[in-house]
Length: 141
Image (tube, rainbow, N blue to C red; front, side):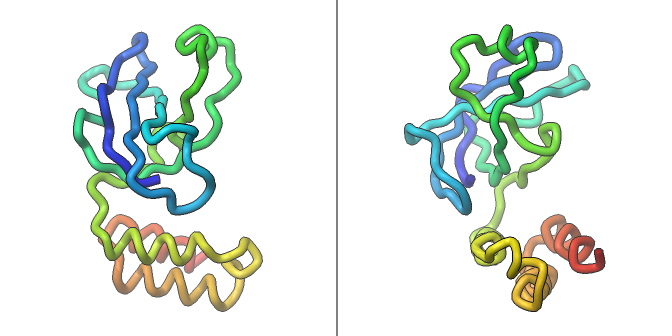
């Protein structure tokens, strides 16, 4: 999802939650409202990785059912940032988002074939450096 972070809040020593004002869904379904909630953990205590008004492209997964998360957010209604809070891009450019959305639109079978390799090569050639490096690593694998 592509969206803007709203009201990031520290829940406890390592847990955080924020609103996500959804601008665009690249794959999957949008939260029930135009503003969803995201949650993540951070071991560092200096500052949160997300700030008010930050535009991000983020991969979400269901919030873990662990008792700690149930204590933090008893009402639920949030999604966890995937890859232990690291599955996001800060302020992605439109061209990188378009290239990634085209690749994500492929079926899993197509992603592992020629069409997927072509999509990854397009990401390597045209996406922002961090996304291009990730695509190159996946292509190499």
